[in-house]
Amino acid sequence: MGLKSLVTGCTGLKNLVFNDFPTLDDNGIQEVTKKTKVQELSLLGTQFLTDDSFKSLANTKSLRRLRVEANQLISDTAVKLIGKLSSELTHLYISDCQRITDHSLKALASCRNLTVLNVADCVRITDTGVRYLVDGPSGPKLRELNITNCIRVGDIALVNIHKRCHSLAYLSVCFCEHISEAGIELLGQTHSLVSLDISGCACGDQGLSALGNNTRFKDVTLAECHKITDLGLQKFAQQCKDVNRLSLAHCKNLTDGAIKNLAFCCRLLNVLDLAGCKLLVA
Image 1: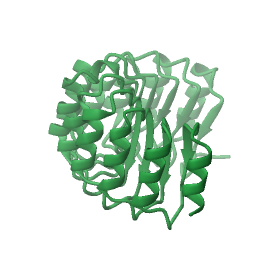
Image 2: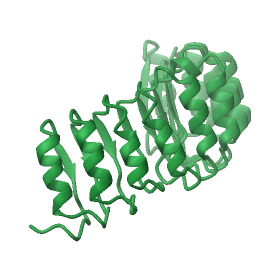
Image 3: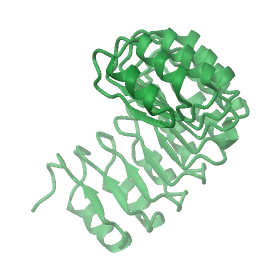
């Protein structure tokens, strides 16, 4: 009742946050779409919304930013409509939505204005879905992509990202266990990147040294990359001297020698995470 009164009285609403709203249902979203031209909507923790809600949002055609998290009812059907009708969509976050598959990424490929996509923890997404996405009109415009814990994504996805995503500045592939050191080396040649998170990936000294080929990196997260040693970090630091933020948390083979190299080479560092690096001496 309160929501209906709100959207009836405030028809100019364009940005709405309904996070952690357990009573919000499809009827509520339908009221919003009937009475307002919502452009930005955050629905984190609203697990009872079904495809009907997202179909209503797609039909408004005014949607620019949408955030959804941990919703196990939204499916490819809804995302297909969003991809087809939401021509103004620029930012889409649909993390930890277990029914989302490659078909959703194929539908989103046609979103010509899409620049930010987060499908973290959507574990059914594969290399094929990433190829669908980047081969479409949205591929060259993507600026930020988060496929953290998409455990079926591997090196082939990185090959296609490297080929097509020439505007990509931010990439997160944390805990994508099928990404090998060869794939990581390719990211060192993706010179549009300024921020990279490969936490928990199979990156060793060879991969880290290759990442150093991209001297534009400002923010790099290497947490739990257990194969990294002082040698790899030294080579990276010698090339990426402008890095501002670096996480080496739980890189257990690093010693004081690596930190000395950082101190000498990376004078612009302002954030450094060394949590769990047990060989370091205070």
